[in-house]
Image (cartoon, rainbow, N blue to C red; front, side, top):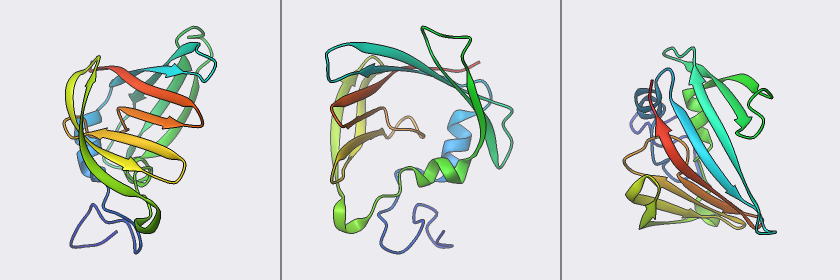
Length: 147
């Protein structure tokens, strides 16, 4: 990470939309993110991500299908690891501002177009993209809930 700009995670990478600290501050313990996954065949599913046991370095991230709440996967993630998910290569990615209308409301985003995927990061919601499309799938955040 560049000491002068915490959005820069390495040479040849675009600045990330958020720093690890911004993700930590916005997420906090008990944040639940609800997602809709639209499949290429026209069907959809709902997923849930929940952060718990947070500290300065990271959190426990629990994930499950809303239709199978008893089948939870869980693991430790760091805020820097989450930031790295948005570190895209300069030569293969373009970035542009875009406004989306989502269940979250009207959101101003940075849109990252890569070779095979598109990601929209809401400037008002530091963390994971609020929408991403890849391989015919579209995943959209439908709610962000805080305990």
